[in-house]
Image (cartoon, rainbow, N blue to C red):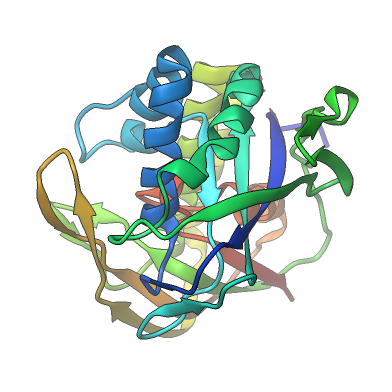
Amino acid sequence: MQKLFDISYLPLRVILTALEEAQLPPYLGSTLRGAIGHSLLGTDKEACAYLYENNSGNSDTVQINAKPYMIIPPEIHMPQTIVGRGAQIEFEILLIGNGVRYVDSLIKALEQMECFGLGAYRYPFRLSQIIHSKEQRIIWRNGKCLLHSMKSVAMPCFELPDVTRALIKIRTPLRIRHGGKILKTISFQTLIRNITNRIMTLTERYGGWTDREEAGKIQMLSAEVETVREKLHLVHMERYSNRSNGKMDFSGLMGEVEYQGDLTPFVPWLYAAQRLHVGRNTTFGMGRIEVYFI
């Protein structure tokens, strides 16, 4: 089978150490994004504009998700995340395609995050380590960058034969909107359309390529796959937006859904979606899924 897409990314696992006890929101995607953005703005305005403001547009289009980075926070802890002094939090940052050109600026911003703090009370955290989460190479430690470790990796175009069912587990709230409202059920066609459009947009804007003809065929084939089990619920969350100076709805679906049909052609796309996420607000780590093939 010919390769369907070619997209590269640099996966950074970031470890921060709390300098005092901190009480943080249950979901740290927005908190981390805001703190990193403030720090990045102070260290490299060009990098901040490219990573954070690139391709902002109509919020009802897939384009809004096509930023060249993602922040993947720790698991949700209700009602809040308590971090003791000296304890660590770990999260991932993915720099997608050409976004890797700003890795030096991003690391400098992470070094300066202690000055900005996390959460409403700006609890101080110090950068402890950055690791290449795919190759397990140390990228930053004790104030030193190991440049040879900062290499992008290719998104695998994974294949499996004879797949007739797929179980999708949604690990962070999944937000797909239609007509201005968050969908409360996810058909396989909707899922595949979002995945393929996201990959096409990322490769078009930030380097790589996608077989658009195959993507179109896959979108049409997806209508033949049926939902056989669905156990989804809406998780209500809010985040504070500095731009609008108020709280914004951050709700999304969590749970699991199982599909049945000839799923073999969809395996590469579903496998990639585990890394790239699905739906809106992927830069906050929303829409993270796990796929189990049957």
